[in-house]
Length: 81
Image 1 (tube, helix red, strand yellow):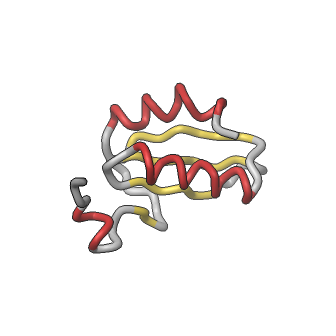
Image 2: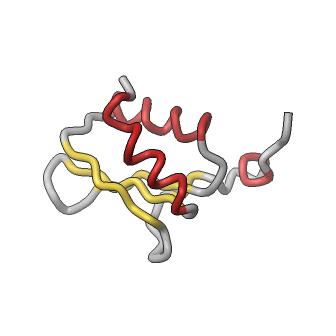
């Protein structure tokens, strides 16, 4: 098993959205759904990410440092239950 240095240094999940991140907007999300999405990202992606609220009602933005991971997440997130 390979150790991810970002996990060890606790720098993988960010509380803010850097401008160079690739983003996916998600609507109709509650805290339980966001927790499941965060768990899925931890298990299936390797780069840094963030989950932040937007100014729009009931909408969050999920940002990824690696563009491929954002594409993968955009395709799979409707099926995460």
